[in-house]
Image 1 (cartoon, rainbow, N blue to C red):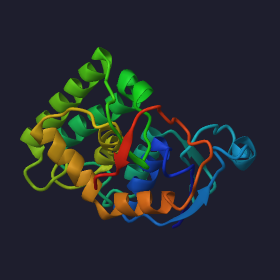
Image 2: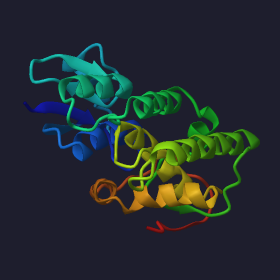
Image 3: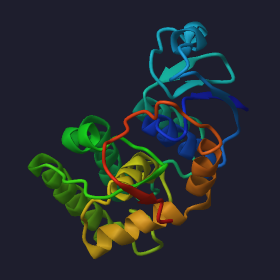
Length: 226
């Protein structure tokens, strides 16, 4: 049972990272297809996947097309109940779905000001009050999950699940823009940065060069710290 997973550029496509991590970390077989987000072929590459217009997109072995990472997560959880898409504890599962949904729909200031980029770390970036409020909300949610369910490992609910895949791009934003977070949140961010799957994703993305670089800021940079 092998799926087709369509993603865009690894260095910048946060949504693609979410979808890929769910397959990769939960050991669900897939064939990977890359679409041209910055080459002008994006619509053409997705033409056979209507009505999909964003990435990631999944085609099931039976030919059904799934867009949106929440829908992908729920479909995979339904079809692969033992893969660990969501925590097994019912209360943990409720909270994990809540946190994933809030990430899917919220944190607009953070996402708007701090586009995911895995090239380097910006120096001298000054987050707005709205982004600082988003960071405070992240710390609140992460601390709650860790305190209630995270004793079994470094992830929000102990072992890796879809909710961690949803927050992996957030961790990358925090690193890429050197955003201020407390020690607990910093430890969770570091767990993402040390994760072999995340590191493999970033390494593959760095094989592609861009001119101009998407989302570039006129700020000094330093090497990626992980």
